[in-house]
Length: 293
Image 1: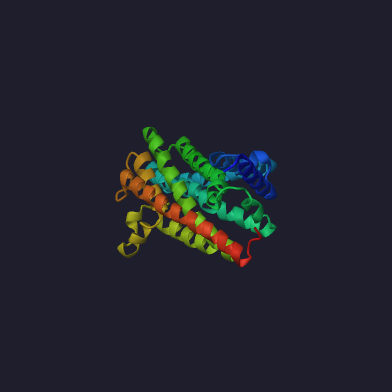
Image 2: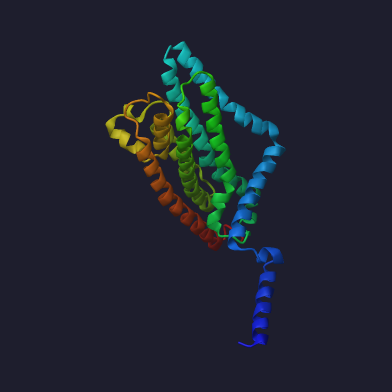
């Protein structure tokens, strides 16, 4: 190819890129830089919202203290001892932390749909499958912080916590947050097409609340329904956390090694499938005219 032909090809490519409306520095970014800047942009949006509504943010962090106080005084009134208080504390803390990761993406997408700003999230020149990762990263972080705050308050009130197992317990919590992000991504796919993501989240929330073992070990469930709890990631996270953080955990809990292995497999399979389904849902919504991009 001659120099003139190459120059013409470059010029025509630049003209086509310019027609998309992206500035030259954006067009020249590497894929990795686009991904990192997309993550940074969504985190910055969340931080701006935190600063704009400081009272709401403060109340969200203070609200998680009250369940801890409730179970503490309940265990003291009923003379149940610190062991049962630890069981309820860890289960409630994990559930509260995972709830942030579970509902963050669908809440944000529904907020964008109601205000007609969803398309503005889709014009960034990055794969659409990255949107759930970037959009919910801050809520996932704050969910982990909320869980740590609750456990810390319970420890201050006298709950016996095994400090040496905290690093591994944080790893289990991280896997649980990723698993809830995977479920939230599937719910977001439903939301994009049908404008409602509540059925998926509500169904999973009910299953997690009853079968996740937040306030009691899964082993107390009848045999005919106990097997369903093994389909809910909450049960593995809560079980592993009790095994790690309690000196005398309840009988019948899953070992941390088994829970970590199952959670890792769940995250790999469901998150990969969820991102694929979310990407396909956006493309189908565009073909159907639901999205204008």
